[in-house]
Image 1 (cartoon, rainbow, N blue to C red):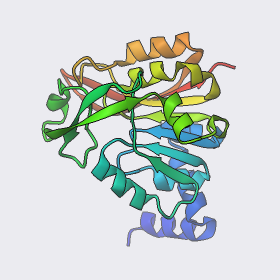
Image 2: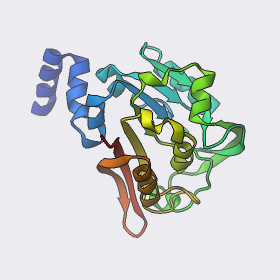
Image 3: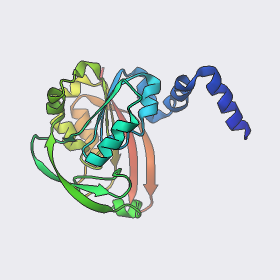
Length: 235
């Protein structure tokens, strides 16, 4: 056992799992907003990879995921967390519009309503392996259908592979309810006609948000960069 592993085990035993995870992951810039949040709406849930992180901060979580098989795995993954709930919807900027949702071969993580563009240059191992037809809902309609109280949530996380701006436009009437919005967004055409960081930042600025922090997820020379960007509502 390395000294670092041993020290980590000692700190974990003293603080407890929840506080240890809170300190370990909450100090990362892209997660710092969690210190000042009490509820999260996470759209593009996939398998709920952040479930332990959210549980460590004790926040209420609404997960939204459209792919049936992935959704069932998500439900199992969050079953032990009483403050987390999952709902099967495709969020967009309109209601009842029919989309072909392309399913990616990495457990659905790169699935999108948009076609692949330069994403294949950054992640050549990722490909589509089929598609399903799904009808969309705006965030407002999802919350109304499930009787979810928006007052319980002050942060939104978006990871929907290029359609983030469509979702935000469809939720424009709700944005004033959120203190933070975290978005995974590229500075290049990763998916066909996907939103890019300059356009997204312009939209957020026009709706009263400023950039709180920006973290590089991946970079490929000659292609571009993916970022996690956290926007904070102006005081």
